[in-house]
Image (tube, rainbow, N blue to C red; front, side, top):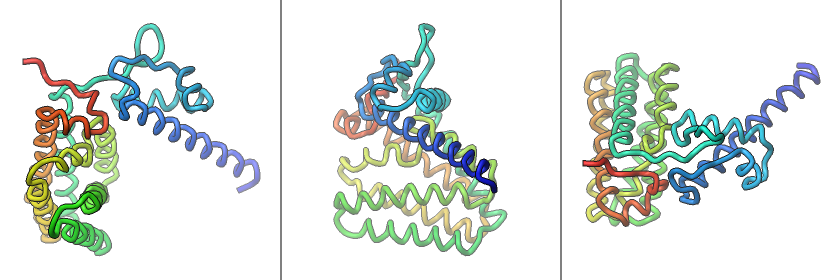
Length: 255
């Protein structure tokens, strides 16, 4: 690579980094509650608020529109969206379907010893975290390892198509496997519910290891039902909703 090629690559990498920084900054303003549903966001406002140039800000706003967190408005700029219970439920269901598909592919095609080892290590660490009383520190370990488990599952099948689609749906507001986990921390019997989720984790790994595709798929789809339960809990409990990142964006379905 000559100097010009190197400089071009560095510039592209720098631009991408600035876009990611803008993306994270805007998302934090929205999910942190600083921007309420319906709030208008303009490029110039974000440029001034984050102290960044217009190009990465424009790219970040377009990306957030694609993810569904923002919607364009006729007068220019974007508005923060709110999300109905049904919309979020559909997103969770779609994630469960795609993760189930990936689990089935992993079981039918087989996974590498390294991937199996990583999955076993992940669930072993969750076992340790769930021993005895569930402290905040242990709960944080569970949250981290749960997210890692789902990342490993999305790549286990070595299907770029499946991985890309799972990544896309994970970016939908409140669709990720970790979106509602914090809601469980305030519930009586939280440890028991986490033990159920952990039993599902282990069963999925076992099904993949035994090349049981249909079982692996069914288990991952069932595993997503926990997120549906946590969504209902959040909507029924203001304390739970307050602990949920971006909880102010969720609205109950009209009866």
